[in-house]
Amino acid sequence: MKTLNKVAEITLIFWLMKIIATTLGETLGDFLSMTLNLGYAIGIGITAVFFLTVLLIQLFSKKYIPVFYWLVIIATTTLGTEISDFMDRSLNLGYTLGSIILFTLLITTLLLWYNKFKNLSVFPIYKKEKELFYWIAILFSNSLGTAFGDYLSDVIGMSYLNGALVTASIILIVVLLHYFTKINQIILFWTAFIFTRPFGATFGDFLTKPISKGGLDLGTLNASIVSIVLIGILIVVSHKRLKSING
Image (cartoon, rainbow, N blue to C red; front, side, top):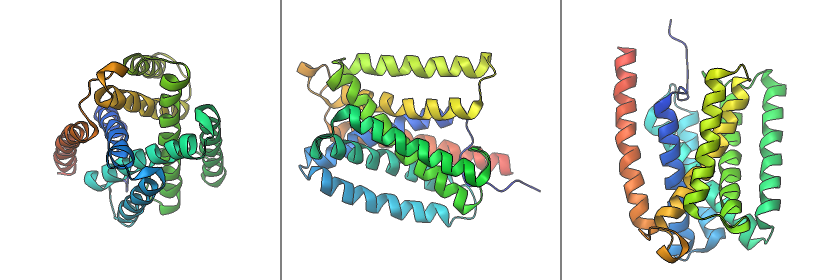
């Protein structure tokens, strides 16, 4: 009897898709709020509707379907960008306070999750209530990652490329800890999950920002299209891999 499951297994392709999805979330979020000049509040409204729509589809699916799962991931990264920017810029909370608030919300979600289920296992997941905790934690972690990425560039003053290199180094350290230490794997997973977000955010900024600000000036639309194509290819690969596993 096969184990029921609704979420992606944590493999190398998972992390690659997560990084591309976070880059897309950054560029697409900026496309809505800045390129289209809709503002952060309207951007939150649009991305929240998208998030809730794909989340409901995911929650009521009977099994793990890669395209539905990754649409929710993309939705959380895009909405996370809008939430972070709204807190930091529209509400004038600043990147430091915004990061602290989002970190507190993430830890609170994880504590409630643990109190309910006595574990924080992220695979497999099949109960709707546990999956809901999973997606809320992902939304807060992606919002936190956006705020932290902006903190590196706007508060500390790092270039977008240097910010991406710093967060990539942290991710590499987490990978080494995973393979060469006995540190709790759940702690390492959420650490890596959080820091892939600022990596994607800073890399997205590197692709889209003007050359005078250390970017490549590709524009939010072009960068978003490239990311959509890449993650689309990987979703197809995931579907074929899942089909081969299931026979």
